[in-house]
Length: 307
Image (tube, rainbow, N blue to C red; front, side, top):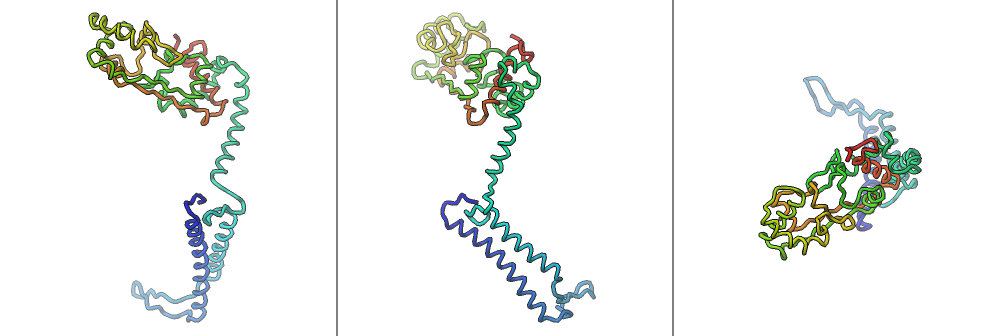
């Protein structure tokens, strides 16, 4: 109620609220005076079902007091709580403040649970059943939208269970990724590499990972790969975790391994964004998530698939 563009709207809302209550009180007392003057047995002339007549009886006293108390309650409420435009009320109550208080109380309870895990090594946390359950719930809330509820990813989103990492899978790197986010860019090379040459490079890339390829076209694409692509992916195509450049010599593909998919990546590029969570998650939650994600691809933690 306090976020108005101009003061006019604040006064407008306040006036409507106050005038409405005053009008209700006026209506009550004006009708009470009419009821005193009118004959209690006066027939209004309205008849239903042949003999059911409406009489002009005065309002019951208990009903009048209830109506008046309701109006008084409304005025007291508007003094104590926000409701009159930008007026915050004597108690300074706000739903945002209430939410912040509830969140702070919840975090205090959670931090008591997290406290023991903050003193443990991430790998020990990953081996703890209760910690894995907490981490899984955090993952489902904050990560599953992109990586899937099973953490196996989808097109353009990495599989977190296979041990193949763009930036590294050690606990410190995972923490950095969750906290600060990542922005992996594959620049579009369509201006420098035409479709035919891009197809040859795709054949060479497919050969690096043991996929079926045309050896003649792959040989033509090798020189282009080493002069243009090796700067990020390395001369052998094994990638560079410092840059987030994928390993092209294994059988893990973010956007597909077909020639058409690879050509599309070469000519149009890709821009992958992992959002930073440092403004969303507390350090304690980030640690629990780190342990859970690390454990997904490390059988030594008692979870995930072994490598």
